[in-house]
Length: 471
Image (cartoon, rainbow, N blue to C red; front, side, top):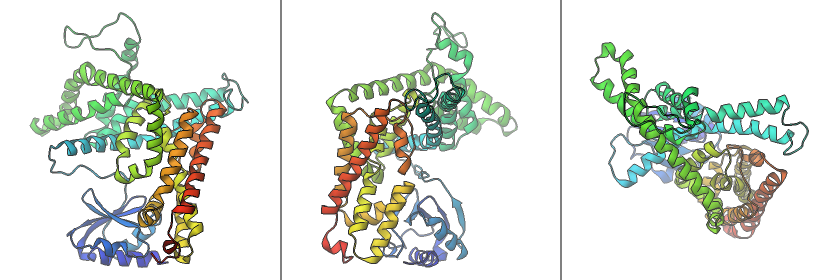
């Protein structure tokens, strides 16, 4: 196998040499080049480099997929005199600066915004959910070691509530960052939505509140634990801030720019955007509840579980998961799409294990074992995706059958996900939060998915030539 220094040198030569590279940065698995001439690299030549899993052109960058060793390759590139920008988030591909208002571009922009605003919240949701999981494990719902009035249960519930109750503030900040406007001003708008005295009005009967002498009172909703209301407010706030900054003299812009922005934004948000977001959120939650109670719910879970790796590869998962995450913020659990993505988590590992065991070529066998371990223990799927699935094609059969089997069992047994973000070998923690049967059925669904994927791949996943490294 080529060492990192050799990979760096070969990749640099293949993308046009040092003079063609403006800067290079890296994410979890890819080198992202900003090139002077994007037409110089020949994709097939780059893919042929030992240690390279594939290439992508996205977000105005030429991306070379390396896998989990990308920081080491990046370090070798900088030693060759390439100007680097360090490590960045995986989800940095923005809408092009020259935007054409076509339906496709508009949908892409919405999904891009949704992904950039919601995905950074996953660690918060995961951490809060894991505290709730701890309380469920030791409390009456699982091991019954301590009672509901125990201080530890109080602490777990407190952290869980903190993570979810203040979601509009956190989402306001991340959405502001995504739209490159003032994230703290956007967070302030989120704080306005859950300010205690205003929240108390939403829970009281016969109360009303009107602004600036308007005859119509503000529609009163509870906005804690919600995402959609603040996500509707932030783009309007960003637009207002930009327009006001453009016309206001620089001498007073720092003080009066944010004030005037909020003076306009607060009534627009409270009267229109936040109530609309609340209604949309309730509609989404109602739709998921209805869908889960119909035969179509079973089918939807099976389809998502079977095709999830393909959805990730094409980016189509962003829209589905973004909506599901927004719903999770309101309900605190999910029995549909997030759950489906969790129960299929070991299907790719089943494929990787079967390919690694069947592969006879020593070099490819070593690589496939690396792909499997990276996926199973670390939850990093790109090496397996590009090194096995896209290369050999047939392994897709394993994930389709395994995911469908896992999704079907989970749908029949009504598995529910309570913790977001737990991945790889920690994925079973997602199902802790209620009775033991939910956890057991979640684990069984994952085991079924991995077993079916393994068996399918063992018999149908590789041709004889592929196993011998001749294809």
